[in-house]
Length: 160
Image (cartoon, rainbow, N blue to C red; front, side, top):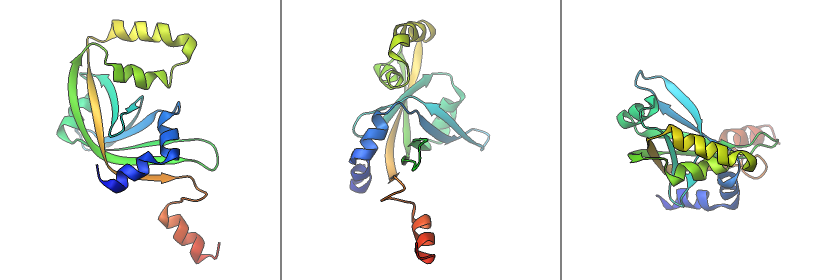
């Protein structure tokens, strides 16, 4: 991972977003050439965003053909906080339910529902595809001190 990408991902706001109960929205190109976006639970390893899905999911076939992805982790409040990442995906099919899937799900499943969720997942999946996204580009926006360049230029042009 390039130093500037690592620096963005190590910022406190990025770390806060990646630890929050917010799914990543993973964008990829389907086999028919159309764009797709799916929410996914994920875990940050310090160098990659890792998620898991059904081994036979259409996105797995699509990512094998074109491993380039984009994802966002963002909030709903104003001003919004956004972590945007682009990267490449590696896929590994594993037996059972990998811990990384459970790690990502823990952020999204209420504690009182966890036992039933985990039991159901373990009963459902004999194998899963682990998707490891290595970031190649990252941006972080808080819309107070960090805004997209196009907005900063627009504001400057209007004297704001």
